[in-house]
Image (cartoon, rainbow, N blue to C red; front, side, top):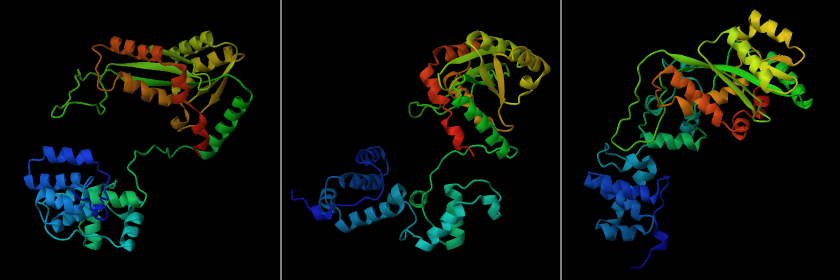
Length: 349
């Protein structure tokens, strides 16, 4: 069969040949399956050849391609409302960009986040143009948007305090002093839920007693060497913190700088007395208030919960404690250095 090189179809979407083949095989609507198959064939044949293979007029093939290029996968659905797909002008797209950049509530809306549906409704109200969800996504990507999870910005944090801490911390690094970031985390026996791979048609369930049993974890990490120290306890108190401090003294050679947040157990009388008693070996550097993001140990907690409590319930709180200890036993120095790299701290301000 002769190939019409100049008449190959140009699909503007990012769906693959295999994706269209899978859709065409699994689709129960014969008319829609026919369109999926045409898109599949477009990767190998010209539109004249596809028309001949499917036994339809070539203008029908071109119409299907135009629908896909305008509205993506949804545009191929023959059950969509009739009519030519709507478009936005360049000026209207600029208005979409300026609007979505802002918080909805700052514009007077009664919701806090933009969704595809809400952007669609705003475009209808503003321009009387109805676009499908896929086309909205294409527009957002084309003007520089991506869908990501934000991070917290603590209102009470003080920029001057953060800079003070970074200056002192840089002095510790330049002097080649040993330093340890310390932090605590509370881990519930009640499991945390996270997305997982399952066979299609199966709704995964995670067993739980629904109890509030928990364990507390003290951890200290050295981001430069990858060394780590941990201790699991039933209570989060100043007494337990002092016990963990003694463990750090036992496991660490010589003197070191201990970097702490302003937790009550760190500021308690017992802790103050402990620091005074061991001032020849421990120098305390306080993190700025309301700035948990400046403690790299937070990344260890996130990784620990992913490995230990996501989608799994331990039968007892003691078994949960053993699960936590097992995580720290297998935590290699290389991973600690990757999780707790301090390089990002100097881009926080």
